[in-house]
Image (cartoon, rainbow over all chains, first blue to last red; front, side, top):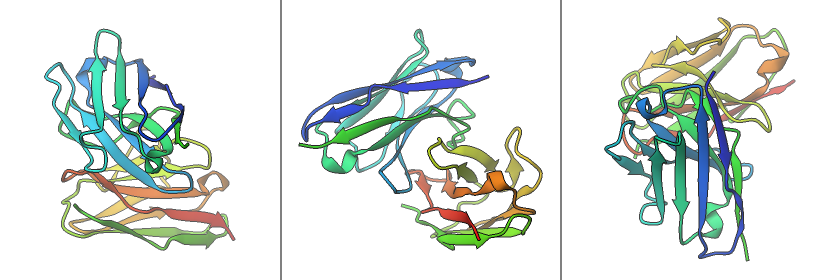
Length: 122
Length: 107
């Protein structure tokens, strides 16, 4: 059974940084694309960033986070990361890591972590 | 960016009723459309991919249809555990986009 465990959320001031982690188990981690999806309090789902499987590191990001957030993966540790810099109040959300069903051709989300809350506030 | 529009925003339904949720894309997404269920306080769960293929373990009362820009999720007989928010998502183009959701609540 695939399990994704998100961590690293917390309270940070505007302009600050935070790194989220997602530990994966029950799968051949390197074989799958992985993504981050967020949900602001009381709002809908918003795609943040995706990274293809394997080691080439091809990534995709929403315009709202481009240049501030960086997605990466360590296949040796079965872990996905999201480095978030220059955080803004509007980045406040629950961040979910999510698995894609393929290496990098079908970008839907077939398994989800439990989510980690990021609060950006002064 | 492809805009996904879901309707209605809220649906009040009695258990046992048939439910139809709509999702419309601002341009064609072919059949690259997924549906998710999110129960309050939980992570989303994949229901349907490819517009009409049920994910593993999803009951047969859930069905998806449509292609191009018009899609439908149908729940044939609503069960108590189905009261939730439902989202559609297109994965035909970057950026990936979700609809705003339809909340199915108890009547």
